Image 1 (cartoon, rainbow, N blue to C red):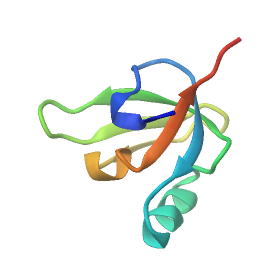
Image 2: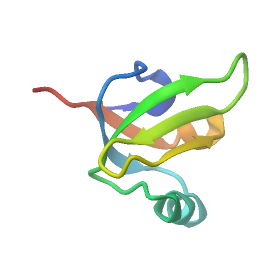
Image 3: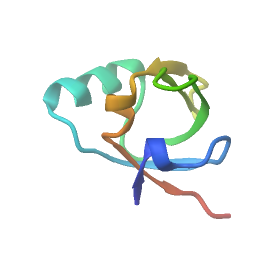
Image 4: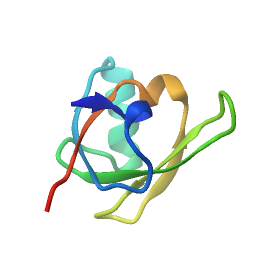
Length: 79
């Protein structure tokens, strides 16, 4: 299990956990990202820019800050 910043781009990933506080969890939940969802890191801004993540199941794509991306724990989906 690794954080989203360390995960490869354009690879299906399972959102395992959000290690942030209640505010971060609630924000991601409102944006449509829940534990167990299959997501992918679509792109990353140059230098310290935002990270684009896509929920493959719902088709939602959002930009999140790097500090939030570090709190999203993922694992590669095999198969």
